[in-house]
Amino acid sequence: TQYAYIYNCIRQVLKNPYFSKT
Image 1 (spheres, rainbow, N blue to C red):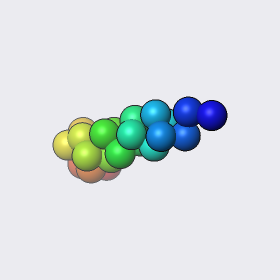
Image 2: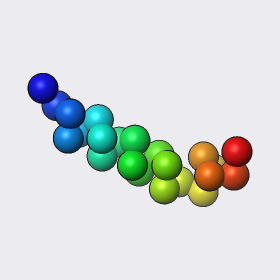
Image 3: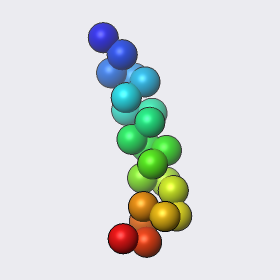
Image 4: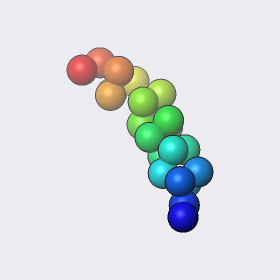
C-alpha cells in the first residue's frame, strides 16, 4: 500500500496556507 504517499500528500495540503486559512 502507498500509505506513506497518501500521508505525505495530506501533510503537504495541511501545510498549505490556503487550507490553513479555512
